[in-house]
Length: 141
Image (cartoon, rainbow, N blue to C red; front, side, top):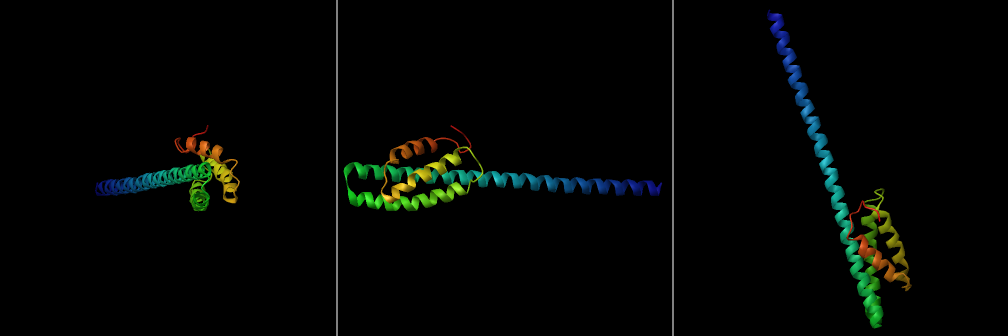
């Protein structure tokens, strides 16, 4: 009798301990998943923000070209270089995600010649950026 109640108490303690450990593991897994999701969302926001900044810079550069304002053109082109660096870093933060991330990289590559005074693809890049920044990162055209 004493052995049976002692065995029941030990079994109950082991079961309670196992469920406690299971609760900790499940909680840790949920926290890890939520943390990863939040990091991904933050990286997606960063990419959208930098894409918007690049788009604004491209629009200012296009205005400078239309108005034939060489000083403004040179300034906006110089500033575009820094914006493209931030854009590349934001794209790299989502490497391997596919979808729109690859399209963002293609726009980045399309805009690089602008830094060397080749403005042929400026309007096409502007148009693509306008579309990309308004759509979710994981989506495809």
